[in-house]
Length: 178
Image (cartoon, rainbow, N blue to C red; front, side):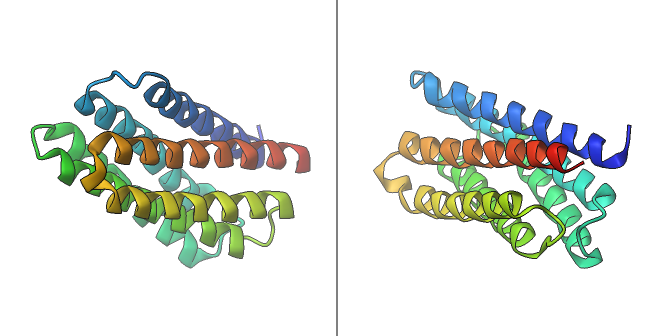
């Protein structure tokens, strides 16, 4: 299997995992807040691992963006570990960490869409649009914490859902280009 085929499969699998986890959070509003935080943390863990894989194996990114991608992946994994190891922390702090991680993830998607000129224009456009949407949702979730934790968590779920859809789109367009 060529590297490009392998990366296409990676994009699709990561995207599907994140879409499923985010959809479960949105579909079952009766879930406990800690359960929702753990599910979103798992989604973030998947994204973090994917970012590290991108930084190591994706050849179409410039060297600096590859290093940046690895750093973002490590940051996302650290946030995930904090959320999973210390669920007794104040819910607001955990939501703020998830919001900041989604902000960084969305910014990275937008930057990759902007500067990865080797990607098809559809992939680049999806990456920028969904990256900016995730960025906006993370800021909205961070600001709306006083309106209620569930409101913030649902905004984060939608942001992670959009990021998962963007990953699937990248994988599909890469397969068609191969």
